[in-house]
Image (cartoon, rainbow over all chains, first blue to last red; front, side, top):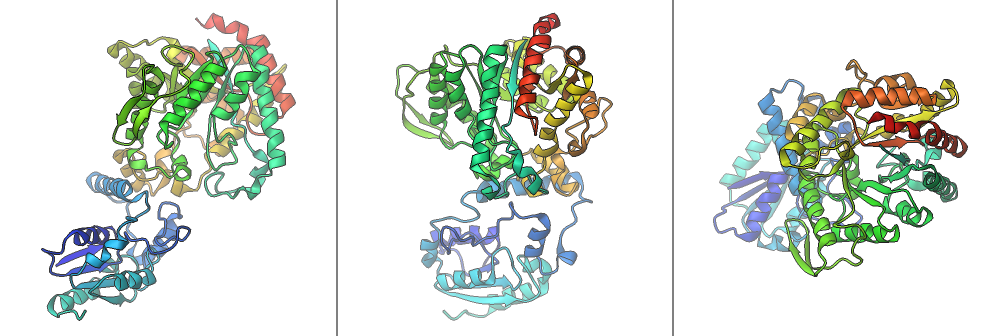
Length: 173
Length: 389
């Protein structure tokens, strides 16, 4: 089973669009990477143009509990995060966090798929998640309450339980 | 020493409406084209006046901002290429890592060089981080694009048996063939603004002239030293003519008058850094080490501490006084004697330079005051610059 969250979900979709031969199942968590709306519609919140407090508000159900505190990081940790952010920019700056051609290949993502979504995600909304689910041939949608863009951080047990259940039970197409 | 008059052509009438950001996110309903036209014409008149004053001309560009209404640096140069006859014209300059079409840049500079009969100096700039959003270029490989564009532009301007082929990492052309070829051989002098010793060394390797802006008493010496050292190692000229320093200059018949003019010009420094923090450091723009440091300082910290007093104290540019700016080496102001003495002290402190980029207009300094400032400088300070060696 392949599990991807956010940018990782995008990578998982790109892999599966090429071949699902070696993919048993796919779990996508608050995934981005696909463009559904029109050219003047923003499907994915622009985290580089919003004030920090607004990015945190959109990212977490409870930012005061879940937002990371970077002030105490040691050198290696800070360098690692800064390096990851630069890499994210390299891949996701333009087109912004999506591959314009991916939508028309989603029909090839035929593995049984669980689309998990934080109910309070303000980066990519649950509506976007449902549209993604409808675009995949063999997928089921499930909301995680009291969670934003990273439900595995805010509700780790709920996410683990949903994925575990999905791993055991055949998904109806 | 050559002197260059520089103005950002500020659209200051919008300033009273702005608070947290003077850039990127401010809607252009705050711009009145009728007032803007008057401003453009007066700024152009001030540059045109320089032709008779023996002061060269420098333009620049910024985007989506009320601090600088010059969004295309080659447009005022095109007008001035014909309106002036003697002085040289520098654009510092063209943000070639943010422009999608380097060949268009080569064409613009070549055409300007021919119209001006060889008076163009061409600047290539990385651009401040808040230029990334208006251009929507990828900050993570900006410098890679910058250097490829630089190489392509120079090849396009120096190839006279074209067309040639270019299939690079970022730019692809199957038929590069720039008409007209530039007037100057092999091409107009190349400039780059730098803000760190590392960038200075990169420019030195290529024999570019560096312009340092807002680096002052503390940060300038290591930048110039890095240039001289690397240029010597690379067998490139390390003459003062390869080094340029920008200062805000207010000169008057009395010390009070000169300082009052500098105080108005200083509104450039007080406003130009006011940017919503999320645009200050797009990931990938700064080095990973700088970004890691900023992360621990919660966000926008990597440009903090850029303005320092002579004794290394951080100065908040928004609240900087004329005395602060003179102390920091950012401004030379007062009577012609004051300005010359301050300039000479700075010149000696940094080991000399061949170009003074004079911000002779900034902020709300009026047309009449700007004309008086430039004229007095030309008459009383410019003739003495040969004393500097």
